[in-house]
Image (cartoon, rainbow over all chains, first blue to last red; front, top):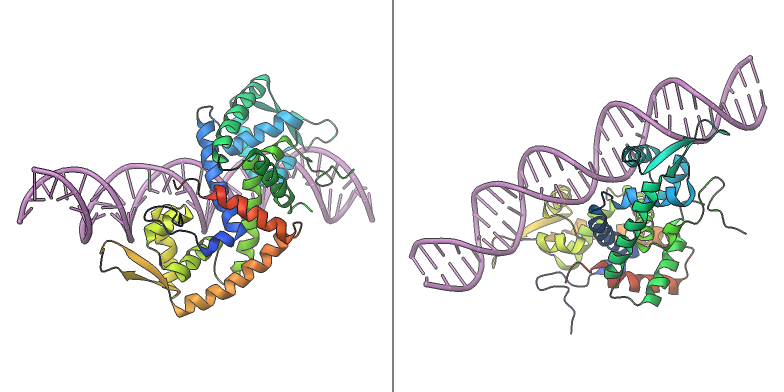
Length: 151
Length: 151
DNA sequence: TTCAATCATTGACGTTCTCAACGAAGCATG
DNA sequence: CATGCTTCGTTGAGAACGTCAATGATTGAA
């Protein structure tokens, strides 16, 4: 019993044993929920992740690109957007004048704390079918494959 | 020791406790690997998933859209592509002449078996840092959140 | 000093997502 | 049987996103 996914849906498929497909689908669901939660704050999951790293460690744009697995040109657009709203600013690095670190402003920090609360709230809803311990296990496993492109 | 992600990288960040971010990054890594494995067969992870369901259960396009979480218009383009290569065909449904089921041809089935082998091979590489049992746990957890948008 | 490498940036191009609209067909109610 | 509401596949347009090549400025090594 309880084999159908929905009334007219397809039901459990062979793709359910494909971790990559499940990863993609779960990621899409989570991203949609996250974007919905952040929309009221003028953020998306992308700009949120940039802001989070700016708040935490003021990275270079190259560091952001590698950590977020985005093209450096995308970082330019994301930082441009955040900077135009006074949430972050680019600070020249005296020791290497090619690079600029992205630092959060006071407004950026305060928006981030609100955004983080919104994200965490909606996250709980997305993972409502999992226990707290199970979410921890999931995070631990994901962490071990998420950065496998960075040696 | 061993705290850095790479030489000049950012290292562990607060985003590592954000399951949605890890989901997005792991998904991107897996999709890139999957697309690489399928490129030689003229497939991508999207068309592969459509082909897989066509082989398995000959769903309607609406069913495909819901199961893959794609817009119906995207299904049209994907099926058009597969059909133009003789891998699937649209079969009218007598009981409901609005719908058409997507069925795999013999060529489609044989390409799928080759594609599945390629995907599974590269999957093992992506999950190389996890044990078999851990991958099973991961799949089980993902399965319980991946379809949370379908009732 | 010279040469290769790295950084941020720009611009172009193709892919993918999202939406609104449409004709055709089903389905319920009267 | 007629009416309206819904669902299906399809088309087309626009935005969002990913990818790639090229550039000027700067660094570091030979």
